[in-house]
Image 1 (cartoon, one colour):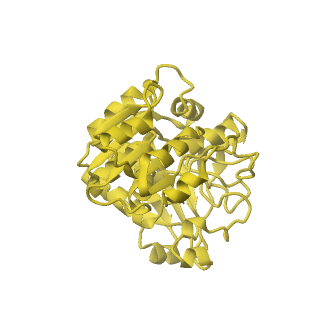
Image 2: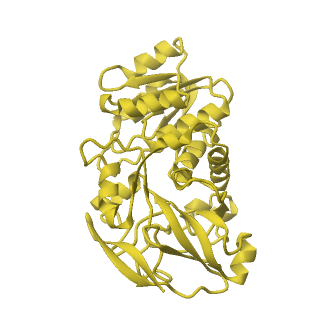
Image 3: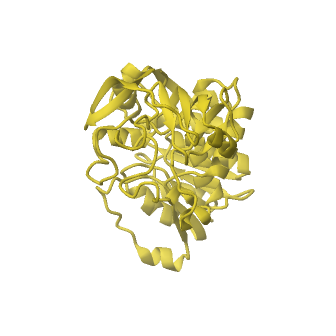
Length: 368
């Protein structure tokens, strides 16, 4: 059996090819991919920003947000994963050993034992890793023995299902890590798919005041943020973010600030100034190693701030995200803006990356 695959062979260069579908061992599985969500890291990878850091090497099959149906599951894998052929599942991207300290401490997304070189995650693995089909931009995904799966309802539309990672990021980064509580004032710096996922998570957690920032060109995203539950939005290229937060909170400041802005470093500085003494800052926006932050560490010290770095999700976050998608009490289909076929992968990535004028993208899916 053959599978169509999208292979990244160089910076900004994708090729559509056919690869053999490998046999499935007792500890493995085979997923027929129904759709694969795209996120900002797909854009960074496409542009070549990850090769210089040693995160990836070409050729590889991108795609780390796949959902689909299990067409074959080895006997041992079926017992370990609690699934059977025919089940519909979402795939966690990280491959973990289950035995190292990170895994045993519950931070399994930090495990490096499966592959010390680069990132041990679907969508970032070279073609010579494992059985080769290790990315979601394909008809089929070969499931490594250390894969973590989550069952999803058979009737969930693919436009919703492919949002599971964006929403899980919002759950973990904006609620679970900072321990956002009932009535908290939360500042979400950035209104992309992760920022909007954070709005939903904070609303579900009972945050009393949700403030979201964006640029003037992001008005459509900020309008959606308000529709999803944000109480206030700030245009950072027209307003003083810190002053607005202070005015909204009556001079108290935000209890929690989450930076989900890529590349730009000003949000980190704004977070330090905008949170209250004793507040919490979560840094989740990848700056790409190209920028440095001129941070006044004395402000962090004297305000006794807690600063968390986060870069991934985890089991508990995925479970809550899939619950929210299943219940869909917030009209989450509004987050989905574009759908493309495998032969349009480059166009999909450039759409999400804002490289195609007139396309206002939030959540983009690649559907074989």
